[in-house]
Length: 227
Image (cartoon, rainbow, N blue to C red; front, side, top):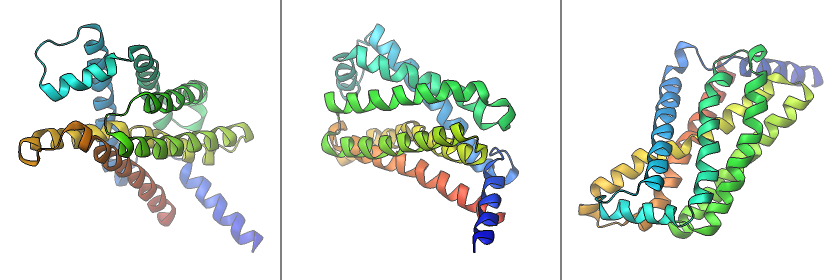
């Protein structure tokens, strides 16, 4: 039994040590880059709105801008490290372990800041109320847990398991980008559904983060089965 378990662990580590760049994972790479683009666009738009509040934005968008403007310092403390985290992730995801030393040293502290400020933002104000808070608390904790596991394996020199858990953390964090198209659908259909942002924000958060969390787990498990 110990030999069998050791063989299984070695196989899993061998699978996890490869970055997600094979043809079988094209769909995941496309989703990853799509999330990167959306995340960057969201941060740029938010910083712009804080610096130069739009005068003719739609009512619901204007209300959201006002919410973030009411605690601008905390918003910037969250979104700017998040932007830096997102921009550094490709240097981890698409490199072998030998080339990920500096990205790792940057991603761990940035991830901790993003997670802690996310908790703070949720405690200050949540557009979607309790449902949004529950989504943020659940997935932010899952992100922080994954990041912590990656950090512990990094300390132990177990590179395969470190990569596996870091990939989980990265994809979960990018769930915030996946929520944006979901919100777009809710905004577009609001004349028919009569749902306001406060009513669908929490739903969008649960859908967006769930998509990313399930996607990365399915991909990791599919790699395990292939091995």
